[in-house]
Amino acid sequence: MTSQLNSLADVVAAKLRAARRAAALTGAGVSAESGLATFRSGPRALWRDHRPEDLATPQAFARDPRLVWEWYRERLQRAAGVEPNPGHYALAAMAQRVARFTVVTQNVDGLHERAGSPDVIELHGNVRRARCVRCDARVPAPLEGALPPTCACGAMLRPDIVWFGEALPEGVFEKAYEAVASADVLIVAGTSAVVHPAAGLAEVAKSAGGFIVEVNPEETPATGLCDVCVRAPSGTFLPLVVERI
Ligand code: OAD
Image (cartoon, rainbow, N blue to C red):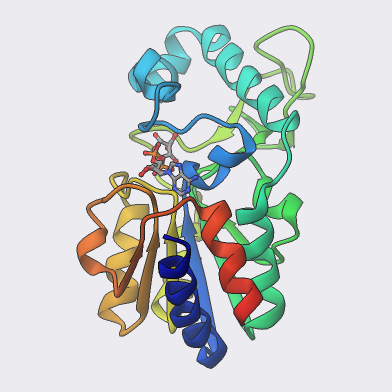
């Protein structure tokens, strides 16, 4: 297993060395080794115990804003209590070695930025931010205090997260599209590749001629697109690549 991972790391590092531009598309699996639960994999999967329609839709928020806030506050507290792992740090290090390296993430935990990645596109928002439902002001999500919190304008704040049935924030998908379409190498790490439009970005990179690397212990719908499939945790494999760039 180790020698196989080392040879795959050699291949990916060589591709990155030659790349003018590269990107990573990441999901919850990249934060699993920091101790955060994923949505759909493993015994602690978030969507195993909860129904997304009860917690992650505008309808759920309209019905019971406090319940929704309680769940996001718990996730905010968990994210604040963990550290980036070697996978996050490896992606940050790649940005020092490749001329342009963009991390496009579905994660809302802020760990890529905390690890030092300089160019992060957050497709689904950030659990550390709240947004006013009336004046659209964005403020830090309060870690404590009454729920739901209120804005200085008096209206309710909501988590600054993209929920099911909502469009991505303006311009964000376009930036992500541009980053992956112009990437010579795209690393798809820690995502089940089932939630669109994020999942479609691997296809965008492939159609534009990019070299696609999947890093995931499991197969996904994106597996068929990949030039290299690495069946290992991102925190194990990505540092091996960095050592070799
Ligand atoms: P998922 O929970 O759907 O998928 C996590 C993936 O990570 C799975 O394919 C696992 O096999 C893989 N995985 C687990 N541990 C790993 C590790 N150490 N290294 C690499 N891979 C590992 O999470 P996402 O694909 O991020 O959206 O989910 C996409 C979206 O669905 C989320 O952004 C969220 C959710 O509903 C919203 O809330 C809008």
